[in-house]
Amino acid sequence: MNQGVNPNIMNKKRVLVISGVLITLLTIVYLSWDKKSGEVEITCKVMKGPVEVKIHTSGQLESENSENIVLPAVLSSQNVRIYEIKITDLIEEGTVVDSGQYIATLDHKVIEEVLTTARLELEAAATIVEDAKLDSNLNLSNYRDLIVNSKSDVEERKIVLAESVYESPSVIKKAEMDLSKAERKLNQDIKGLEMRQRQLTSQMGRRNIDLQQKQQRVDNLLKLYEALIIKAPKPGMVIYAKDRFGIKIQIGSTLTPWSPTIATLPDMTKMISETYVNEIDIAKIKVGQKVTLSIDAFPDKELKGEVISVANIGQPMPKSDSKVFEVNIRVFGSDPDLKPAMTTGNVIQTGSYSNKIYVPSEAVFETDSTKFVYVKKKKVIRQIVDIGDENEDHIIINKGVAEGDVLLLNEPEKLDEIETTGWEIYKEQIQKQKESKQISSQPAKTATNSRQDRKTEG
Image (cartoon, rainbow, N blue to C red; front, top):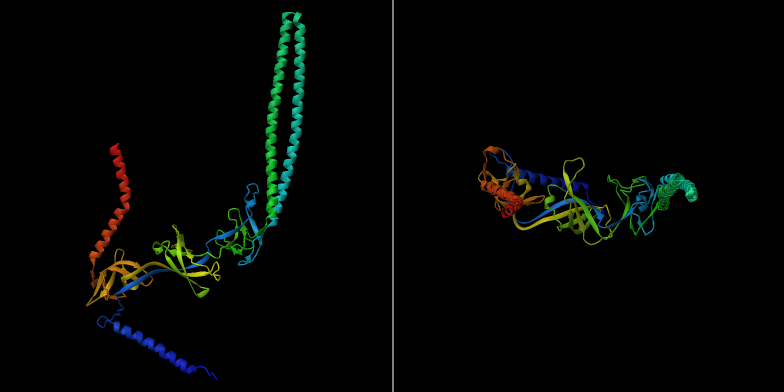
């Protein structure tokens, strides 16, 4: 029979372990104690060997490719004039759907109200067109009657002129003038009819266009009304979209033609981790760098990936002055356990060095212009160093220290009395900075010289 472990024995073991740890710590402090000055010195040794430079971030899984479920396209028609619409029903996020399966319902009431108004406007436009046709026919009929009368008057004047051939010259002259006047009036009436016809045709054209537009609006609203039941364009898992404030779409959310996405159907076979890197480390991130990913939901899983994009423009962190840059990491292979929005731990390998001098990050101190370490020999020396790449724990030292040197991890007292060495390293750094500035400004100078050369040749 299993009697279990005696609690008293467990407590004794725990006390012994804690006591051992405390004794070890006290021993380290005692050995590091400078008995002359009374200060504690925490030291480390300069090491040489392989160094891996990695950046740790957390991210969120997203599908690299996805199909958007959006508002009906007819909502974007210019004559619909509906600028926002609410979601009245929406299936649960994460539901796996087939092509053509129900996704959401949009607000019918808004369309019904607008459709009623549009139909009234259509009826009014149709009435205006019918009235315009009647007015047009009446106007043209009056003009045609005038022309008929003017033609009759011309014929009468011609007869009078013919009968006055034996009359006095004055009578003949008057008859000719009357005929000329009647012919001018006939021409004026004909031109008046033509002008009135063009005028009425133009008016009717405008009214017909208005009628067609109103008819088209009613037709589009009817199409929209029939399309308020949103269905899946293809099989997949429904993931809610986010609005412009980063809030997930839900029942009651308002969508617009400019932000029409209701949800997405991600391609689960191609996943990426969307992460953000602070502005201090972003210069180290390059496309193609290898990444090891862990999944918070599955601690035992380890995935491989690579950086596929690095944002050029940063964005501010909430409630902070710092900026971060979006970095996308492609996950190699596929795993049925992976789901969008899962949290990932990303270890981005930004550098790998086989044999480098390196020290703990705590051993390197800095001022505005120099970086240095405190080397402990017979006495403590402030040594200027030239540093290279670094990771979360260590910094590579290019110049200034050698393997096995003992460094202080805490800043000593009486800093004014400590000698500073390594000024030649500082001078080299200043010279490199000057050369770098000259190289960066060289293209502009070359262009200026080329222009001057062309002027000289001209």
